[in-house]
Image (tube, rainbow, N blue to C red; front, side):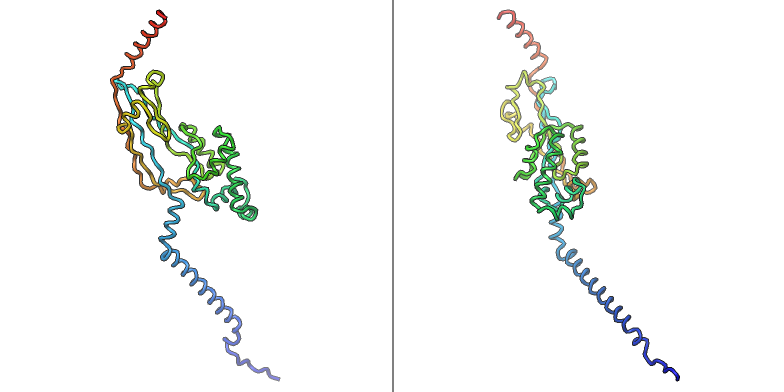
Amino acid sequence: MERRASSATPWQRDRSLCNRLVGITACLVIGFTIVSWRLYQLQLRQHEELSAAAYEKFHRDEPLPALRGAIRDRMGEYLAHDERCWELYVDRDHLKDNTRVCANYALMQKVPEAELKAKFTPAELFAAYTAESARRLAPEIGLAEEEVLAALRSKRHVEILRRELDEKTKDYLDHFLQSEHLFGIYTRGDVRRLYPAANRLALLLGRMVPGKGAISGLEKLCDEVLTGIPGERSIERDRVGFELPQYRGEVTPPQDGADVFTSIDMNLQEITEVILERAFLEYS
């Protein structure tokens, strides 16, 4: 008995395969359409809004302190002058970013971020991160753990932890903060006022009080001349809070204050004090 030749066309024979290919193609077209629409939304329609949000999140305008003018005697010797230093501070605005807090705490604890998110609420995660940060940092800066923790949980935008740091200490702390994944705590430039002749001319020179400025003496009398104009620089920070030097923006350099020269002669002052002291000892 002869077998009949099949009259089915290739399309009919491969209908199942063709249907699958059509379905896959349709899914790919729909997927690419959705992705393209989303890219259009992000790149064109929401570009300005998202750019502004990213700028606000990662951009900072960092002040550059100006040196206050020096007070000198008639020979040009310093009676009062500024010296550059650094301060350690907490940026509370950065610590409001739960994503970055979680990422750094995961690095500190050496566990996956997903595990922390499943275990803690955002408030609990913040409390755990700040407690661990205070525990690690406090011994390094000579403060009680409670003081550091209070600064990390403060309601103010910026809290100063340590002032008048020298360059060596500043470099050490920068490395320590990075190696320990301590996010939201940074160093920045500052100045301090020195008085080489404070024991002799304290009342005449007056003094500067942090946060209040000049309060007495020549410091207050010549305040407008001595005060400089602070500068500013724009910086970008990465998701863990460290500066990205390659994205450093415009820099406005500070203008230091002018020096004030007095008629005081410290050599003559010293000779006079020695003579008066001898006379006091001799006739008292």
